[in-house]
Image 1 (tube, rainbow, N blue to C red):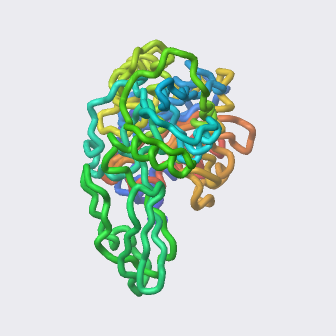
Image 2 (spheres, rainbow, N blue to C red):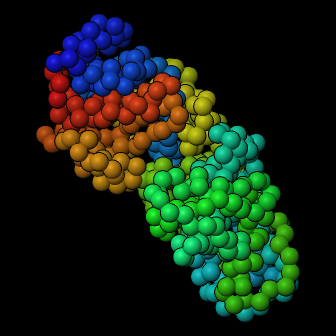
Image 3 (cartoon, one colour):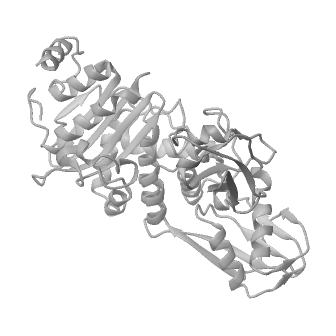
Length: 459
């Protein structure tokens, strides 16, 4: 009862910007999160209705965080089609070397490199390794620019010949009084720190990572034995030489003797010896959207812009192309601003109405099933896999992209209500306490799953 009274009092302070008031459950959630309703932008519209059931600050320019990946996804599907596939041409050169030409493949893992090299059927290379990364131009962003944490995998910068995401995964295993740390790929020697008693807690903080650009990572702390085996993926601090070091390691592991150097050079003009097939666009979309992978989003946008005719695009040029694509389909009121393809930016601006319009347009496209299947399914997988009870009737029935920054939480996609009706939902909160306001988005989702009943009755 006290929550009801508070919510009704709170409702009196809501701005008059929607024909329908916010559902009572949403008002209560806002009050409990101590977030004002002016920080929420919302559009809910049935796919079989011409007008939104609820539009709250729908035309406000807001930071959508990783909802930007929806725009990248739709632009890629519209331009390339779901069956489009990355390909990496490979040459055995006349001077006894090897040449690789990057095309933006986001999944060139050590396993694929090893298998591709073995299929070439050679046991020795006497010439240089030539790496052609000219398909994309480098950008101006430094990995530390966004949050000052360049070791985070989400801050790795894209490139045409991206090997293993420029990552090293450090596995920590307890061995008696020691915790032994091994690197995969084995670009660093094994390390060890003391294993300590007590609860697991913040094991990453306890390891005391020493990460400096241009130097190899070191661990100078300890590791709680109660944590068992753990894996910590880190961006390599020497990204410019990562591909060369990984290729040299993979050649050794594949049993191919090599004497030479690694050089950046154009690929030969002759037909390639082999083409290493990469993922289809539909496969990469699932990897990107289920886990909200920033690097795949940037690789995808660059590949799409290049296919659309932007020569050797930089991340900045690709973002300009994406903004033009968006404006042609969702309008310019308010003026959108696209900074990159992932949403990892403070400056990105879109309105809930623009995203809702884009989703409604996408619903009529032949590739809509691939887009839906790439999104997290509420309560079941991806970034929405935990605590399915919080989604109510929407659990297992809503395909939604999540968005999270320090001061942003967001949720958008298609809700398949138990009644059989399908709804477009876009909800964004921009507020210093946004992280406390996730229950607001969940309240909206539960309300939509009940066919967005009008009036103030809480679902």
